[in-house]
Image 1 (tube, one colour):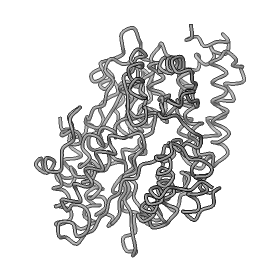
Image 2 (tube, rainbow over the protein chains, first blue to last red; image 1 turned 60 degrees about the horizontal axis):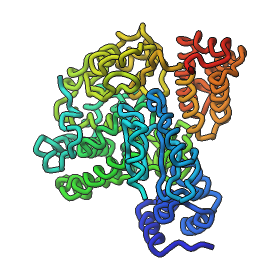
Image 3 (tube, helix red, strand yellow; image 1 turned 180 degrees about the vertical axis):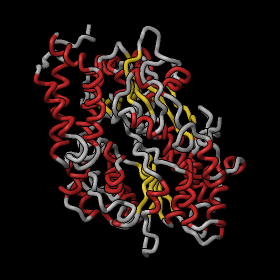
Image 4 (cartoon, chains in turn cyan, purple; image 1 turned 90 degrees about the vertical axis):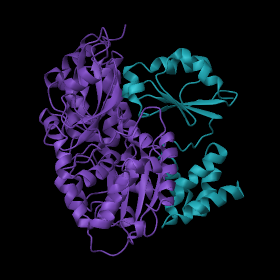
Length: 156
Length: 423
């Protein structure tokens, strides 16, 4: 079984110390693992469940519920394309089509070099500046397809 | 025109530091409630102000607080609902990024009123800048003695934590939010018991929207009568309105409660973009009924929008123009709701994907005459009272009103066997 690193365990123990019930820290624990490894593998689920006094099935039911806990490997950078109503009205599909043509990936796929994964995302909450997308922690808004090359170049 | 909530927010400028915020009267309301008022006096003041919850339901804030049993020993909690994920809604982002101390101040007032000693900001994952600013502001508030033990020497203790969600629309529903805070799947809980009695970890808990909480310092400082006087309608206060869609100037504005739809659309958003005509709008996010031309002079307050057959919801409008297909518009909404259903109750889990598939078939030119009846049936079957929570009934609001106002467009998709908006 894959072991959690000492650093991951320390961070998870810290999260556990902040809550009145151990299990309540399980989402934070999953976030810790994802931060370190990019995604949460079956082995990580087992290791974290052990630490949380949960069954792997119970923890996985939580992990798979949330959109932004990745249970499959993702690329070094994750592109989240807003596909909700305000972005749809202004034609976000140009943006998605450009990215698909440029990177050769559909939603849910990762470029062969492991650089980008592209996912749809619900409303990013900047509808007056639609269309919008996020790459990792960065928000881009008022997008035009011709800006995308320059944006993608920032991510190695 | 008074704009208490946004007066210190300047676009593209750092929010006020604690020191700067104090210089413009920040945290005065904390001094006032902690030193001069009893918790029940604070609740009575908020009741008298007629402040209604700005998250969408519009329930009286003071009334909500008054359901908290004050005589039970043990912990109570206050949670700021900053999980803004209603499609087309971008008002709390402004308050969170623009003036985090105002939210913290409001949370201290609310916590004191219900005598909570632990509070949480439940923030959606995508609001990275807000997370940064709130983390910084909470630390400043601790350092200045507004949070922690024995606040301002009054003996009152309040801790505050930031919890960042990992993305699920359901978390905005208050009981689902509490499950998420407890590290569970964000399924909603049965009500009753209501969270005011049995919420986080089974303890009395108040969940209030960010905008609601940001009103509190101003109500404490200037009084209930002032709060009512700055509105244009029977609902008190200001409201943060927004408009998105193909208008000239999409944006977000703090205005007296009760400005009309027309004022917002024409005076603030500058009207439709050239070459486009107005066809309809959702007044407050994806889960509200369409309003159309005949409703342009309706006041944007809870009662007036309800009288027009819709809900004010979050007060952030999404505009439908004549070059955009209403069926495609509703399909986008139903895709969202089907995806975000928690899957707990059958009508929602099975019904929403069915609705989505039918709308998709219509868009592809594969619509059949009986499809309209199936959609009509769903608006009843997934309506209020038939599902475990408000997600599916909310999803049916734009569908049922689209079937009413844009029925001819649905029929054209079926008879012409194509989407008339696609070239």
